[in-house]
Image 1: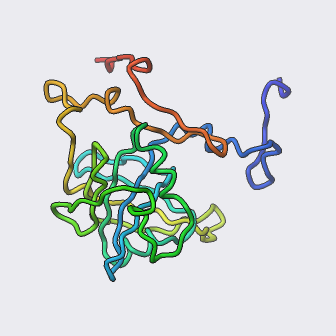
Image 2: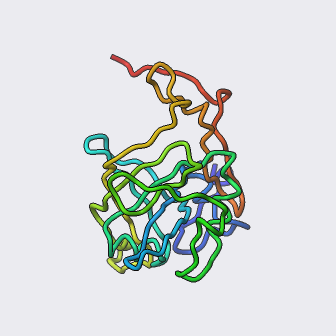
Length: 206
């Protein structure tokens, strides 16, 4: 039976050509995070560790492997935006993850348009069909079971405002398949998109 499974302990390495962890926990929503420095420099960066964690109040979060410009901006200002990545925006999203100095504006780098938010200072991506305006509630440096800090920061934020393109609302219901969300998969370059072919319905048991 042992030959039917590949077993490994992460602390000893996985023994495979590419770490399978990201492929197993996926595909994952992309945290396309807009932020602004205290000096007013705009930043836009995608994070593959992103998700929603609470309904009321609505809380989203993402993890940054490394203390990057986004983390510093949020720690200093307490605000950030999330912008939906769709198939049409995938290439621009990829451009925005280019490693560049803090003074470089990724909106300009990726050919995107910043548009003013309603309640926070960081702008949203005008081309994105859905955006959240968020205020940081917790910023936590992660640690292992040994208690040692690891160079990864978890940012949680309450969604204080939501922008949804009217074209994605069908009788008042958000149509995920029509939006065409792009999700991060495993491997160095794997992404997935959501369409009507993947939709199935299943009601909760009563």
